[in-house]
Image 1 (cartoon, rainbow, N blue to C red):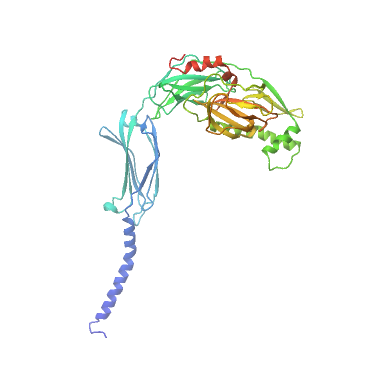
Image 2 (tube, rainbow, N blue to C red):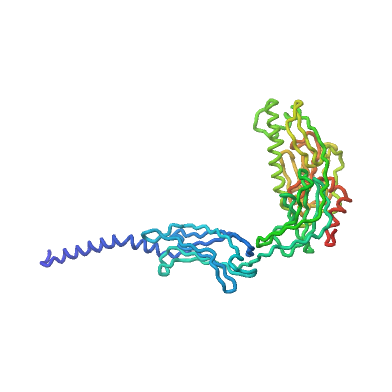
Length: 456
């Protein structure tokens, strides 16, 4: 029943109105709750040294997947003085105030002197805010501080050794001192870098090489870069002797190609002479280059100590090829390729014992394409010896060896045409002439005499 004043109808209309209001306000309530999210933005800076030189790039990222980045601010503070390095606002979308920038890259270049700062400690401060409605619409924020050292002075380099006579394809040793610790220092030979190693006396030692393919006029210098990124370079007295490398002709036969190419192309059917030659050229060029990359990946990292002592031991055998031989490859009377031989080939009886040339740590054991089964020994400070074409290997990676330790037996693996040992010496990533390292007098004059602080 309905009374005269229509109360049930009014109550019904009121309930309907309330439902309409709830339905209408529900999205606003949901959005409000979402906009009031309380998660702080993520702020990450890429790892960088706490030292800042005359110029330092700071990279990183600010991210907020919920309401988006609203503001990024970066400042540098020293002695109560604050300078804004970077400041940018990122407006929100029209409507509910959500930000469009979920991720903001940070990429700035700091130049302390341009900002009026001096060498010494400073504070790098980074702040990021999001578009949350928290804190009376100020948003959530992330905050990062890092104490840094402003250092705009380049390191000083003092060359200790005075005599540096090096042959093309040969090795040199230089001793130098730095005014401060530098994460990167060494010798530049043209554009090739040879890293230095710290000694117990505080000096730095570096083996460097003149490549067989570099001219006697190649520039040499010592370079150093400190933790702040400041760099210095210094020249040093030197003389580069010209080396006459032997010319050699290698005559290829179909019999040799039939024998060797299946090792490199095991999944391909037997080929005719022309196809075999194409396979050989791919091996002699492309695979050779890949093998060099594989080897130098090992020799770019060396123990920071000297393991070896005295002249390096030569396997008792006849010399079949020498270092730096300029090889011309001929097939059916025609020249088909040219390469350089970067070791010394030693041949004796088949499967002869191979002694370690000197003490060191076995840095690599495995197969290296044209070199076949190979062992590489790290003698410290960037000096390595290499033993290739082995029939069998009797030591393991990481093993410590002394001069004369049996490494394995000679063989014909790889691109070898007969049983022999291919012996190589490397300085960092450069092949050098092993003859020098077999010569006790050369070692005394050019290497061991410089290993002490009172070096010449």
